[in-house]
Length: 157
Image (tube, rainbow, N blue to C red; front, side, top):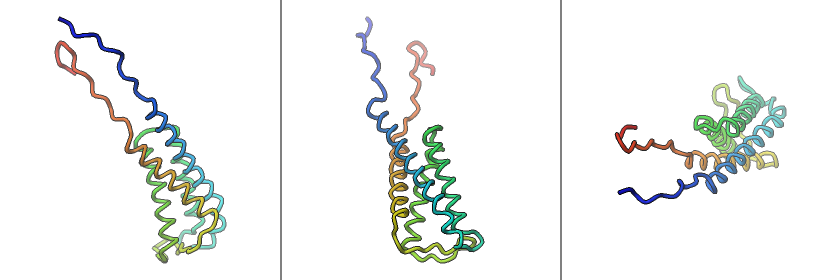
């Protein structure tokens, strides 16, 4: 006796696929804003120096954020997503630490303590937080590889 016919396989995607796409766009947008603001502000911080100037560190952050935004949109693989999450979370953590804690000079890194808020800094915090949250969503909801079904006759994969 044969088993009753089954309907088509359930449609994968739908709302989850849309949410993941929206999260990718939000993460990339947040990282792009982060990249722009750091590149825009870098020259203002060239005078703050140790072995490396704060302006140079801003340019490095801008480059990393731009690369992360491209990876999130174009590569769409877990290593790229982890890199983007690290850039967003790391940038946000450093911004908040240097806003609230006078760490001082650390080796080649200059004293970047700046206990004030201003428009570009607030926009950077929001952009990095949005990117970080979107990346956490993407990492927590990433598709798992499907297991192959065993053949009906032999049970082999």
